[in-house]
Each structure stands twice: as C-alpha cells, then as structure tokens.
Image (cartoon, rainbow, N blue to C red; front, side, top):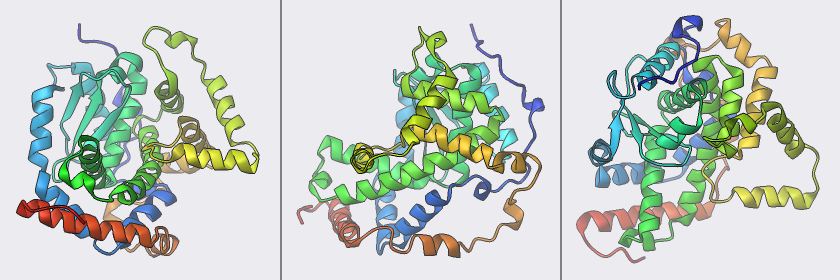
Length: 328
C-alpha cells in the first residue's frame, strides 16, 4: 500500500521564492569551501577525478541497484519531494532513488545533474514529516552546490576502501580536509531541511532518530530528553573533554547529532528562521558572488601538508589516466 503521510500539505507552507542558498549557509561551511578552493591545484584535481569516473557511471549504478521514485513508485515520497522542491523554489526536479540499505541515511550525488538517494532504513524509521526534512536537507546540498565536492569525496573514499592503485597514495590529508568541510556543510543543509518543511519539531526529531532511532521502538524516544542531552554535551567542559570531542570527530563525515540539533535550535532562537519566513533573505537574482568575508575567514584554514597531498593526488591521477604507475 502506497501511504505513510501525515504531514503538512505544501500549501500550508510559505514558498521561499528565488531564495539564495546564502540565506541558510553556515559561515563555517562557506569558509571551509573557500579554503579548499584556495589550495593550489585543488580545482584541477576535482576535474581529473570527475573526468576519470564520470557522472554517468554513478547514475547507472543506482538505476541498476535502487528504485527510482515516481508517482507510481513510492508515490507518497514523490509527493513529499515535490513539496520541498516547490517550497525551496529550486526550479527543477532532481531524480530521487531509494536504496535497499538498512542504515538511516541519505545523500545527494552527481555533477551536472545531481540526484538524491534515500536509504530504505530512513523510510522505515522516520515519520513522513521527518523524512520530508531529510529530503529538504538533500535539496539544500544541491542548491548550495555541495554535490560536486561531496561526490568527489565519496569517490576518494571508495578508492581508499577498495585499495585500488591510486589508494596507495598519501591521500589521507585530502580526505581529512574534505571531511572537515563536509561536516560544516551538514549544518547548512540542516537549516535548508527546516526551511523546506517549516516544521522545527520534525527537523529536530529526525536528527534524534538519525542518532538512535528504531522502526520498532520509535514511541520510546522523547525529543525534550534529546535536547537536554545536547545541552549537557555543550556545557562547560574540561580540557580533556575538549580534546576527546575533537578526536572523536576525526574521520567522521557528519557532525555529532547532538551538536547538529543544538546548532539548529540556536539558529531558530537567534531569529534567523523567522526572518527568512518573513521574506528577509538574499535572493538569487540579487546575490553578489564576491565572498570577501569568507575568503578572509578561510585564508589559513588548511596547512602545507594538505597542499602537498593535493599535488601527489594530481600526479597520481595523471598516471592513472595514462594507465601508468601510481607510485610517488
């Protein structure tokens, strides 16, 4: 049976006409992305990776191994997808797939024509309102032009995990640098998830279920308790606690869920969410593309080790494209 909803109809929400992604992007996200692009050779490496693997192969993989969501396939999910696309005024319709994967997760991939992928675990565990915030979150990634870099990061991880020839290179610094930015980009897209659904409770409860939801025991969760947990985590801490928190994040592609829910609640409390709903936001048609503040903030974000790793990856990609050795 094709039904799960009980979520606000799109007509109940304010359409954010011509909204620019700048309206929801976290300053740390913009700073980290600017710093990546400022690394000599980084853009060239991105182009080479995309050229080697291409977008077509990824799309064909999911066409073969996932269900494309349409009015006849997961029709209620398709309706949610169209709703958030309309609310965030994206202007086009990315394809949406559901993959048979038990983990509660989702993603947006691609280069020229990004698409959204939802794990079946998310469909099982999340309510319709919560799933809708996840869909809006992924649309936020697309609107913010995150998907090119996130796709490259995914490909680098696959190379490292499968121990292909290129994985023998010292690409760890590149992966760590990109993971740092990706964690920041999640904070931006959490805001997009909220704006696309305009349901603060569902946005925060979705993060709670990402942390520890169960399809059989969802009624055992209490959002107020999770928010209290987030407050406790953010309270004053010892130096040792601070060090452990940083170490625990190394290698992770997402910020801790308690931090994400705390950041989202803080953004609401500071009035940014309400101002956007009142129409006080940057529009795409008037958006200046000179990010001097971001560039200044990001000037020394990453060090010489990352620049060296970028150069090594670039040389290895040249060798891989020619079918030659990849030793450095």
